[in-house]
Image (cartoon, rainbow, N blue to C red; front, side, top):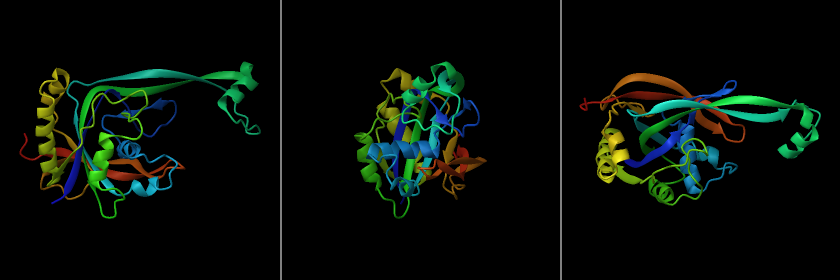
Length: 247
């Protein structure tokens, strides 16, 4: 039997960044692998500059079920001022850079995408030599060391993660999660409405799930971190499809 750690994510706004090209920062409808690893690492108290972070990122799998029936999408605009680049000058702070040449400041416009009213059920599993057991991670998600966000700092979580442990197949874990959180939110009209909506597409990383899921799509996502210091990521496969027998 495989052990799984299940938790929920809900925030008014979520932004799961895609690779940024130019001034637009796109968002995927589901969390990236790096975002989920970041949430767990922050809960455990692992700092971004900790040398163990690259090793930590290798030993866990995630599967996602998004409830998106009521979601909407929007884009906001951000402005930032900066002087012309001067490679010969070294600034110790941004304040020094701006104060030195106030008349040479240029305004840069950037755009950020967000989704709202999306609720997620996350199933996490560990592999051999994982540095933290699922039981340890469960306790960390109950009492996180650092604040947790749904992608960006302006997107704080609106519900506790409510982590629970489960044994069985990946499909067993999703079925268990659905019943558990339905019971938890029966008296909450907002979340209960989201849970009653259509959420028949599942996303996972593990191979050989065809006996439990009908695979409808295989995507390549560049969200497996390999070097946190250099912000380097590599590609991985992401499977999506329907749970057999749930139609």
